[in-house]
Image (cartoon, rainbow, N blue to C red; front, side, top):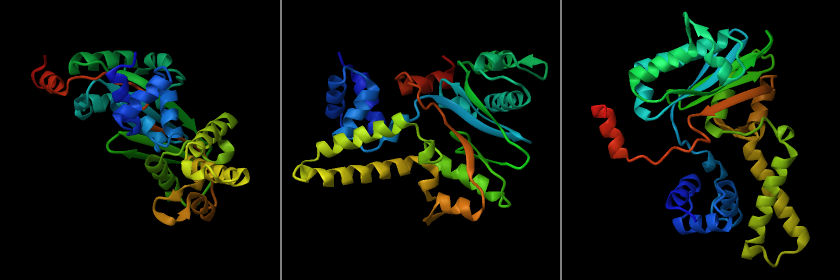
Length: 296
């Protein structure tokens, strides 16, 4: 049985109408990922990346220290906490501990010691003081050589954080520009060459189904349809490819041109947006405000 909550979740992720969302979920036996694909194939949902809509609270952070950098996310139950001074201090503590330590998993990170106290204890103490559950959700460490360059960018106080790593360049600003590009345009890969074959095949299937469902194309010959398919696929993959995107500072240039002019290339990037991939339970907002105001 498809629930109203599932329909609302799919609508929030795709922007499609309620009845279309219900039908998509019914057709896919309630599988959210398949329902999103179903809507795209029918041409009802055209923005696949809405599937990444933020669904949890907290903040991300990006820190750089010498040849090491970290991007991390700490979650809370409500957005109110993101403005709490103790929460902001905890975010800094976690980042510094990760930069100085050698943890590779969240479990290992909990055992790191910073200023005489484990991160687990830092988090437990913050939870007790602030009054709601706080968790270190994830982090990623990047390392570079002396010749390489880091760029970092934090958007909206930590709703999105990005670290980029570029090969040697005399233009130090380009690394930050690339971080801002990744934050704003959300590419999935550096280039088409970095895309897994199954990712390309999945997008090919989506575009093929869209064309099949387009009555205006029904009379087109097979060779024309193949050309349309390849053109649409290429456009979709370009949007997911950092180097093929239009540069946010100059829409007449592609990112690849900017990198070439700076005699550099992007080696890696990490982009965290708060809550992506997490389903937040549907709270009553009025109750949430009351709880935060009166501590109930």
